[in-house]
Every structure is written in structure tokens, then in C-alpha cells.
Length: 71
Image 1 (cartoon, rainbow, N blue to C red):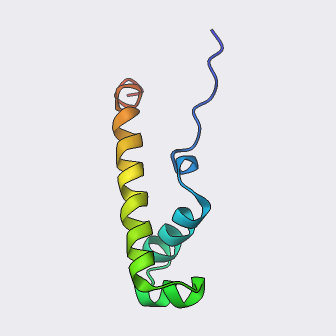
Image 2 (image 1 turned 30 degrees about the vertical axis):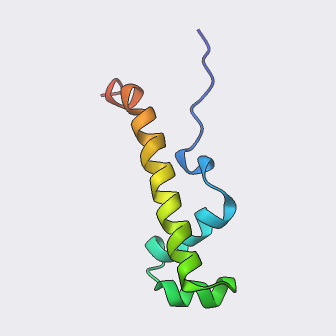
Image 3 (image 1 turned 120 degrees about the vertical axis):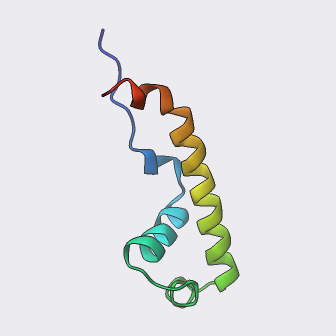
């Protein structure tokens, strides 16, 4: 049984959502700093972050059964 390798969880996000999370979470920048770097408003940054986290949450919940079986 050769099942395909699971795709990385971040692959469910758009490039813009991944970039916002990288800058906000990994780099620790504020929404205002990220907005300046990306040329958008801080509200757009917060919205992209919110949507990205929601998508990741739903994806991880959907994968939950396989993750529990890996132990």
C-alpha cells in the first residue's frame, strides 16, 4: 500500500497568508510593520492572519485522526 505522502499543512494557505504568518509569528513583527512591508493596511494584515489561522485550525482538525494514530 503506497499512499501518497501527506502534504505540508502550510500548503493549504495562500502565499499572502503564509507571508503574513511568517512575519507576524516567526519574525515577531506588529501588524503595522507587516503592513508597511507588504504595502497594505494593518487591517488587511490582521484579516489575513485571522483567516490563515482559521484555515490551519480546520486543516489540523481534519487531519486529527491520522495524527493521533502516529504515536
